[in-house]
Length: 136
Image (cartoon, rainbow, N blue to C red):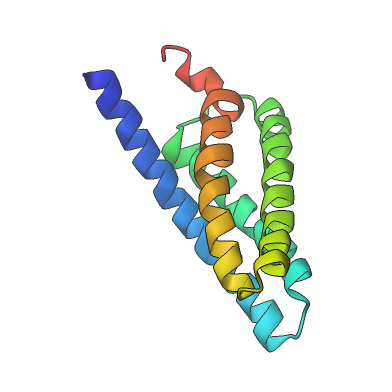
């Protein structure tokens, strides 16, 4: 039972980290699109980059307690997952917006939720920061 509790706590912490990163991501996206007039596709990409940097830092120290991992290898793994996340978020937002005609913020919210749970969390837990969780 303790293992289930630990996994639930880790998932909750990862989602809190994702929310903070999403606030950075969405904030930058909105500022660039609404105030600076940048096309939503570009601002989605830039926001995703900034959110990813935020997420990596929080996950490294607080969620997965990976401070003992070699940063070089963790960074390479994170980069792989992060590139996938940026591609999924950017093109997913663009496709959903163009195909459905809904506002890009609605599309971005839907896509971000799916990517956060089904791509980011899963791969960060099992691939990026796995060295710290060999007992799972």
